[in-house]
Image (tube, rainbow, N blue to C red; front, side, top):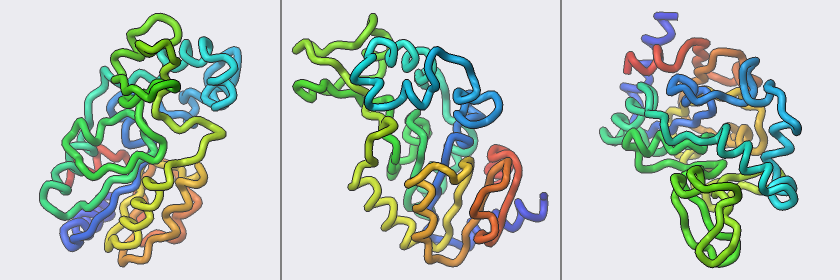
Length: 238
């Protein structure tokens, strides 16, 4: 494993157009629970499956129950960036990392200092009134009683992509362009099983594809380097 980390470090040093594509595993070392592990949200017991609660239909029809779950399980405000977030921000500041593409909705990449971040699934930090489109921060939503309401009386909805909703076309386009232009694509902390986000890896045409994840992924055989270890341990060497 030490040899693989050494090889990864060398690839980063030799590359000047790096793109990072990350999933829930990037934030678990900050203490944020993931969804699909044995201790993740999808394996906990609720009156409804989390996939159902986090759907557009459920939000519209059972808004109060949606927000009970959302406020209890999706509040990321107390968490801080970990070494992976920090090192990625440093690489961007040096001009080597051109973009972070994330499936996470916690805003920790920006909190660490990253500026070019494409959030495939939106962010809890952005919330809008469904009637007048007025913006509200996450604190307002998470600290509200019951269903958060706008000053106009409209219901506020998080700018998070729910099940049954499509990804933002502009975010997808920018992500694809970044991946196509990359000489090194680092895919980390994701099982690469969530479509369409996982399909973005197919646009990579560069020199080196690196996969860093605790468990195997469906794309391991396409990678130039696979590291099954802690993200924190790997990025601490950068």
